[in-house]
Image (cartoon, rainbow, N blue to C red):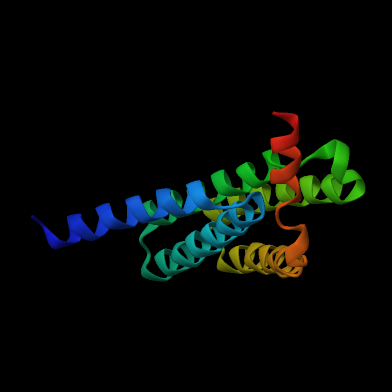
Length: 140
């Protein structure tokens, strides 16, 4: 068995296990971290002039940001959800622009915006991390 194949398989199983055990708060944190990781990889691809992989990584980043956007609860979130919705839309447009123009400064801008969101998300006190999971269980 190929060692790299075994490592990839382990990572898939480990990721699946992490997702199944994660709270809604942890899932959002994982999505943010995944987008940041792919944006960083896209920047490296730009530096190496690996434009095909840059496109793949920026596409995955945009998919993750779209996932974050679709997870917003516009009713319960009020102005915060509306502002995040507009910000996610802005990020997706900027990443499309960055892809077309191979503009690392635009990718850096989106990374900076995601880091701000991450800091706010990570700052939510732990006693509030499971609230949406509890609401979901009560509804069932």
